[in-house]
Length: 361
Ligand code: PMP
Image 1 (tube, rainbow, N blue to C red):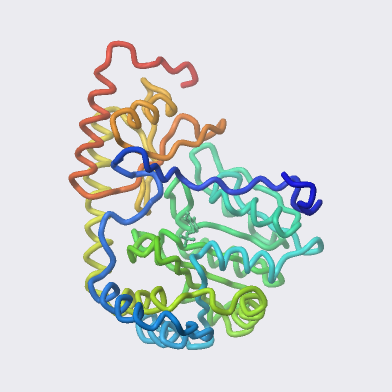
Image 2 (spheres, rainbow, N blue to C red):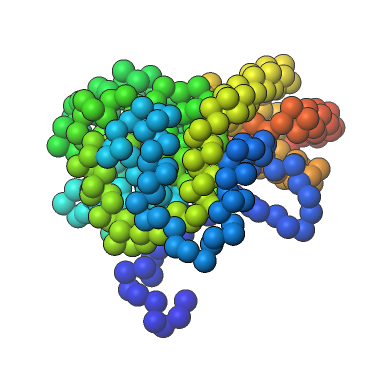
């Protein structure tokens, strides 16, 4: 740390992204990317923009706004685009919360929420999930604080039904409720349909998972026009050109190519179900995932050991060494071939004479 680093950031612990190894080729099941390339239309449209990158991108993101209005059935003034959904989540903390408007979110959820809260000097509380990792909806009814809920949640993959989301939003009319739908396209119920009814609801989504554009960095938010305007004020005050030309074009292509989107998300859901069944037969237990990852543990071997042995064998999964998560690993649903390789590797690990005995079950 330099002596110039601002006092206000000295205690900041940055978010730790999943490993992006370069030293060796891994089967990468650790950052919930799609195993499929972007839609051919998205690729073509992005390539066409490459030749005019000398020009700034359109700060109003007009082409994307129109594509979202056409493809997702929202009004043009009910949507905003950002550099990944991390960006809009940060904007939501900046725009709606401060010392007098604190935030709550589950104790186990997306690890960026506490980082954004600290970055923006916003007090926050966490609400423990139940023992089985489900959210107790009653905990959020009329809580009178701004709320962030990932639905489906991460890293558990568990989804709340839309009626529960609506109860939470309806019971906190004077607070903003942010529903982070990064994984909704793999089996959750979206709350976008509620934005006309509730002026305090912001729904965020990403192109990183179901639309195969993690490397392009594109996220979107849906809300009533007033909330969107507030977020636009923050966006224009930080970086109005936050979406580059190639990403904007790729995003339009990805939204337009509905067939490809359905094909990819259906394949991932089918693979998730097939592999979950296989893992259960091997003795793993897991949460009911509505996402593009499986959150699994095994009674005979610790989460850390599983992670390390898989890594040795060239397969990367995500491990969190925290008290409630350390038995588990979060395994991205990859291609069928990648997931078969994972199952073979796990079978081999479990066959070893002395899998580290767990004492905590
Ligand atoms: N929300 C959740 C729950 C996530 O897991 C992620 C991905 N790490 C994001 C938001 C952000 O994704 P991106 O910035 O790639 O849109």
